[in-house]
Length: 173
Image (cartoon, rainbow, N blue to C red):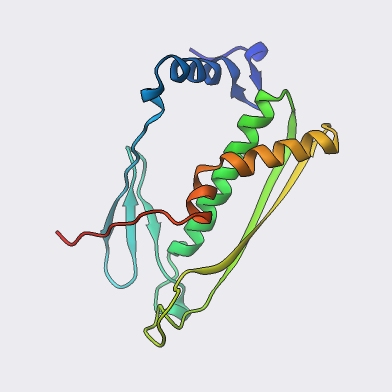
């Protein structure tokens, strides 16, 4: 069954999202979800992540880092995951606020110092900082867009994960 045009804004099924919100209000345990990925090494610096029933998401390093440049590397994928999460947040929250989005672009970049990754130093191996630049084409007022922007920043799961220290346990089995 597909939603009719009267229940769609920004191609988001408003009734489906509203149904999820009401189900969680009625049973808060339904908000607790678990996500998983299963990664297989394919030789050299290539690997692939299997997620649910989707085609594998491949990963590789650029030639300059010893890979074959056959796919985005993990840090690029992290930027992509953050950008995709922000896009979902803008679409969902704009729809809830009744804001029509004509176009949405999120450009992300960050710097990584390779010293720690290459074993040349100790310390922080990840991004020093990440910048996400959001461009929204909409008839909404600047005030509405500022409120939307604040809401998305406050509710992005990947944004929160990247911004805040998250317990990470890596177990050798």
